[in-house]
Amino acid sequence: MSDEEKYNFGNYMKKAQKELKEFVLEIDQLNSKIKNNILSLQNTDSEIYKLLFNARDFYLEKRNEYNIKLGKLKRQKIEYEGLWNHLTKKIKTLQKPRLNNDISTSIDETKLSIEDVEYKINIMNNKLENQILDIDEENEIIDELKDLEMSKQEKISKLAVLEQKQAKNLQNNDYYKTQIKIETLEKNLREIYEDLIRLFNKRLMTHKKMLDLYRKSIEFEKIKSETEKELIKNETISKEFHHLFLKLIEKNRKILVDELSNRVKSKIPLTKIKTPNIKAIIKKKKKYKRLEKKKLAIALDKQKAGKKLDFYELQLILKHSKKKRV
Image (cartoon, rainbow, N blue to C red; front, side):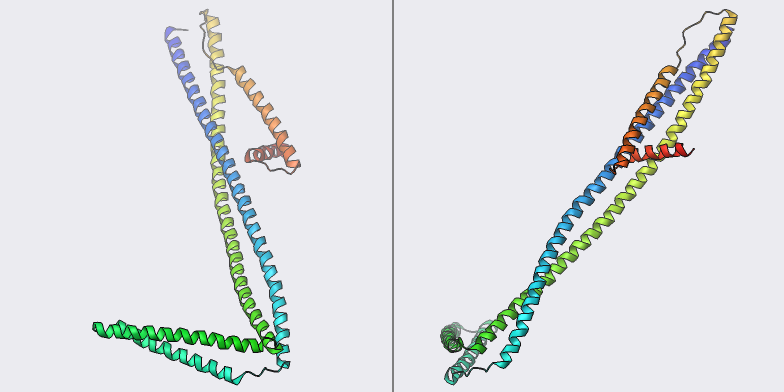
């Protein structure tokens, strides 16, 4: 081999070694990217289930709480409505009590008198607010208002006494007692209807929030799908680089064999040439296969036990199934 051939061969080997290093670097970078994508996928998947389960448990608990309260109110409503129906039928059979005419007349007159005083008070207040008055006129109106307020309070006290007397006369009467019960039931029923509407609305809001949660889970699934596509894309590129890497190693191996053969023939002293460590690569691949086989066994056991699998474990099982079909 001439000096020129040796020079060209040396340059070629340097170039080949440089290309090999670049390929190895790119493969490492892609593998790192794939790992990051796997972690991102697993984190996304974990986040989806975490949000779903936590929110589902919270809203289910709230819904159950509302259902219990609604059930209790509905039963109470049925009970009160039944009692109300019974009492309204009963009161029709009872004789209306005779009221003390004097007390009833006094009550009516006192009520009218209170309304008259309130009317006068409103007129006086409007006059103060809307008319321009001198100081004497204002003081006169203010004094009249004080007198009217005192008169109103006296009449209100008188009305309370009259109504109390009338109630005392009626308190032992069946008609009166039944009427009081009906009024109490009607008040309670109004409160129950309001509570039912409020709880129905709260339960509806809980249902809407669960629907919002479902929509968010779909968004997470889209992110997961996009990550899976990115992972598959990177994996394909990595395999292509790995294939090129093996081809380049094989090509350099043949060149080295030919060169060593030519050197022996031409009796040129051998020089130490750096070559890829093929044995180390093969050993590394065997180790990777053993590790992959071990992880596959674990994944299959988890699948049989009905446990949740991560994306990498699902990928191993699918890959194993394809190999078996081939």
